Amino acid sequence: MHIPTLFPSTLGLVSIVSAFPSRMSNPERLSRRLLLRKLDTNADEDSLRYQPALDFDKDSCYHTAAIDRDGVVNKGLTNHGPITRHCRDRDRLDNANIYTRKRCNNGWCAYMYEYYFETDRTRLPLSGHRHDWENVVVFVKDNTIQRVVASEHRTYLHKDKPLLQDGHPLIVYHKCFMSTHNLRFANDEDVKEVENDYGKWVIADLIGWDGFPTPEFKKRLSSHKFGKANFHLTDGQFAWSLEKAAGDAVPGFDCQKDGGKEYKNKDKDEKKDARKEKQREKLKEKDDEGEEYEDVNEDTGGEKENDTKKDKDEDK
Image 1 (cartoon, rainbow, N blue to C red):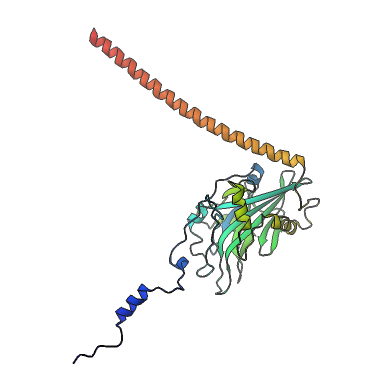
Image 2 (image 1 turned 30 degrees about the horizontal axis):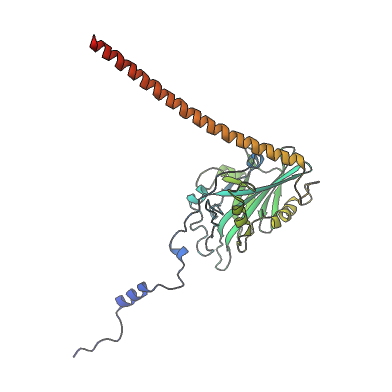
């Protein structure tokens, strides 16, 4: 007599588990999150001139775009798992933006450059956080860099004469011992051995405070909640961050307000020059297209003349 078993087979259990996945499953652990497409560079000439160049230690993520071309803000990555999983892929650098805001008065200009990272992980199980914002501030007087500061958690490191490459301060994103990540100044060893996938110092596409596609983009980025991380270019954060960065080393500089007409006029002139340059490029493209069209016509005309001569010869 056959007595049916009361226990399902191992294969049956596997089938049931596969059919009903756990609600605790984290999709981010199973597949890479879709990339955000970066914005095109749109910043004034001086902000581009003093923009830092970055490298990234091998135990560190790459910075990337915080908002894409459709106005979608980056959701970030979980702080669980291996330190550089998904956040150190080359395509992160390919789609990187940096955001900048400047303040000029009393002979000084301060340029703040803000870098977004999707996560800040450590090797400890309950530490780190989704999203990370770090920044560098470059203080300039008489068209010369006088002071550079780099964010280190809630404080700033500073140097009056950092290493430069073509006028760009060299900065490294790295992991602090038994802690999260921050920026530091490059040393001679860093210059000898660049560690990112490009094999060179990175200067990503820069977006000025007035360089977003529309005011709505800036509003979305400024109002978004990034958890434990703060976007320092907002009206509520900018002046306070400048005060911490300047300390007592920038005499006469007012962190609270922008300068007078001389600075505003300079900005207007730079924007006009940028518009004129774009117009010149468009006209040049049209001229080049016109020359190609004329060349085609000339070649066609030559062929027609030869055909006419052949016809006359045949008639004779």
